[in-house]
Image 1 (cartoon, rainbow, N blue to C red):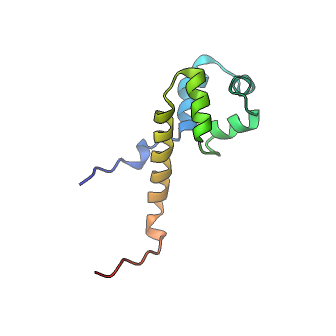
Image 2 (cartoon, helix red, strand yellow):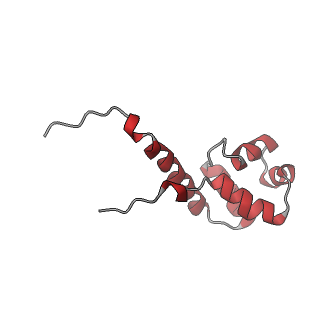
Amino acid sequence: MALKMHASLAVHPGDWIKTELVETRGLKVGDLADHLGVTRQTVSRLLNQRQVLTADMAIRFEKLFGIDADTLMRMQMRHDLAVARGHAGELDVKPLAA
């Protein structure tokens, strides 16, 4: 039986990047966007958890900060799964007949 991680431990990668990497370095969103080669809006939406982390962005953060893109993508997957589990009871799925 697999252990289930509590939903409160599933942090959106944008929130983690914001608090652990961006704020600790005193970076501005516009400067970060310039370094990443994306728009300020893209970075802002990610850091404020209004956008998912894509594989492309994970690699950009890996190149910029040295944080493993795979780790960031696993964070996104865990967050997405925790959100989905939060409304799993609303899903109408008919089990297969035995």
